[in-house]
Length: 91
Image (cartoon, rainbow, N blue to C red; front, side, top):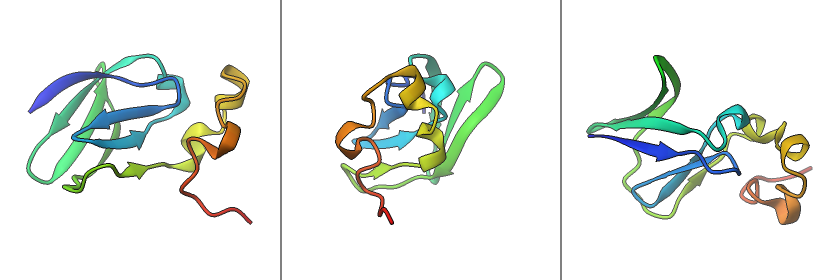
């Protein structure tokens, strides 16, 4: 299955009820999401920009903290109240 998805301004892309983060430079852009029986791959142009094992749970968010590091420079307040990193422990 392949479909075009838009990367949200918070670096998230949604598929099958789950949310995954991408590098902030892709925020606001469209990407091609390719899902098969065991993997999900996101492609921009000819480049694979993300991929992971497919999850069959619902309403799960998977955040890579380094994806969002430049976000406050581009979108002040984007990380207010811990979003989108709310699921991560802080020291």
